[in-house]
Length: 155
Ligand SMILES: Cc1cc2nc3c(=O)[nH]c(=O)nc-3n(C[C@H](O)[C@H](O)[C@H](O)COP(=O)(O)O)c2cc1C
Image 1 (cartoon, rainbow, N blue to C red):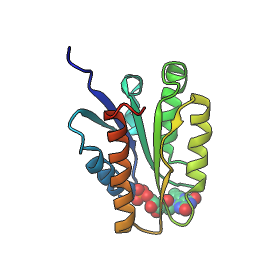
Image 2: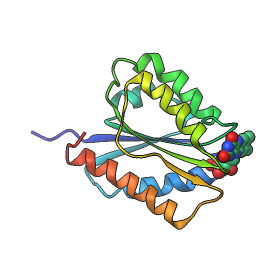
Image 3: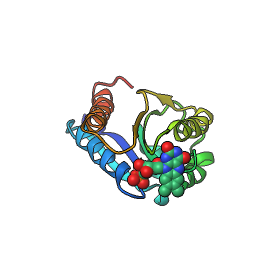
């Protein structure tokens, strides 16, 4: 019997490109496992179906006004109640671009995710004041580690 392909959902929003570059690195890292199906989603196109079929999720956002971006907040508003029971335990990770902080974006997302009952499987990555090669490498490793974790059945 064929094994079911696992789905890794990457939801990210970028206003001026930094999170987008981080997301490209996350996707490049996650692409290493041929048996993992990657889906990328613009949070403004929030899809309950995509969350329900995800076996793990990675979320990327800029920090705006000490919070996640409006687009990512919209995503959570759209999926929250529909996915509340069905997505409990979903493994997740975060990456954030910020001018000088980033903690507000992380904590605002973590508060919502606590309600959803998702499970953190990596430390959040925060890029401050422009992007470095180290940050991009960390993003590649993040994508790789979630993809490999799914492939190995760790989550
Ligand atoms: C409207 C607005 C609000 C922002 N608020 C914050 C903030 O509260 N804390 C912070 O560290 N950076 C803040 N920034 C800086 C962005 O987080 C930073 O430039 C980030 O790299 C943008 O990511 P992006 O290029 O993917 O849009 C803000 C930027 C904008 C445009």
